[in-house]
Length: 178
Image 1: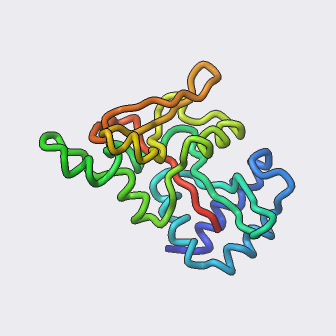
Image 2: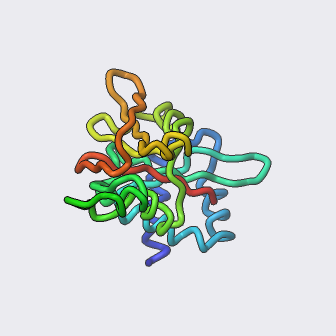
């Protein structure tokens, strides 16, 4: 991974999309990244798989910046995945290439939950033609289901599906606190 190449992608995106992070400066984000070089690999993976990560939140108490996938549609390098490893193991035929939760963990990021997904939609329009798995509450997952969201008709919609299902237009969005 080329750190300078990654930073030369992230900085212009940050500067172009100031509505996502009003009152924040790239200099402060860059300083935080320099203090947490272990996070650069995860950011690279977010970028490599089409997530177009950008800063969408800042915690004043901890100084943590939160990068979230801001690609207009669900990241192309993370589609055709069932929800988690359990669903992947249970699927007997036409198995997908992997699971969203396992890929999330391997990238060192977190999957967005419903509140985080809804917050992202206040910063732009995302998933107008695709959908994204979101972190699913344990009681729903124990019953075999999983949740996903999209944005249609000016609203965020939350749906359910069997966790073993997968679609070419459904992936997942991640976040990375730095």
